Length: 341
Ligand code: AHM
Ligand code: MG
Image 1 (tube, rainbow, N blue to C red):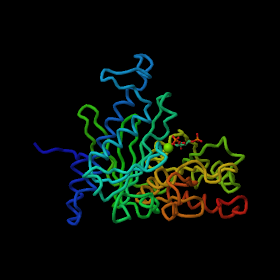
Image 2: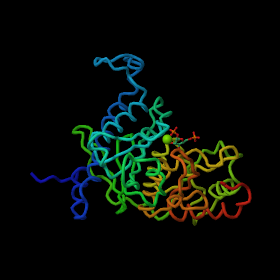
Image 3: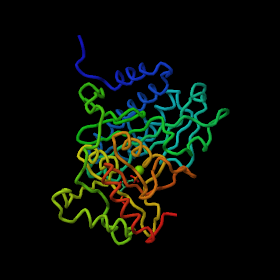
């Protein structure tokens, strides 16, 4: 029987065939991430039952203590990447230092993976969408165990990046630098199915997403841009609408589909904002550019920033090209207010 749909695994294999030089390792790595995502998805879907059924803090039938979901997600992704063997080290938001995989297969892996296993996890208890973010780099060092240097690469070196959104449906969206494709999990059969081929931002958008409560500590350029978003102008669909979930993956995903800018700027106290460059800003920046959009820190292209530490932060302005450019205009106009460095 001929399948009428494309599965994530089928799609990955088909794409690999387009590049005869590809050895299949990246394909396997992406599949492993998809598998770990299904386990995490299962746990998230039961999160609300924890209280009712007394899961949290208890010991389950296997004698394992029930874990907080962000720790559980971290362990699932690490386990999947470890057993896959294509990745020789992992950098995670949950771990201060990189995790070097030294078993016989992994130590020869060509790739290093940086992840935020459960982004927006403070939203779990209110049943709001959360996500997983991942960045895949080719390792830079040639010999011996991987080192931090393998992770300290600008985002333009990314081989692949993506996210999983655990929302009203669960999706995996990724790019290997040839467009962006989105797959929706069919929970009845446990398979990701291609539902959003070749995702692109709409030409323009009318949504802005920012935590406006910090208005008075934003740079003047951001404040002015917010006012611009609120002005009346029929031609440019203003005033825009504000939408802010507080889960970057969910905010980014909605804005990609509907057309909108997401901003997490620096503040007076935290000049580099909150989001982490290597495993939060870079993966979405790569996706945004592949979807015809733009990502910057207000002045510089995100993918050109050279990281110096694993967990370093960067302001993020991301969305359709014209919206981000407009916000950058305001940032440049008021650049003397406060600079990032
Ligand atoms: P987390 O990695 O601790 O979950 O924090 C990242 C999240 C993003 O998903 C979201 O955009 C941001 O924090 C929201 O922060 P704020 O509450 O300051 O608006
Ligand atoms: Mg996070």
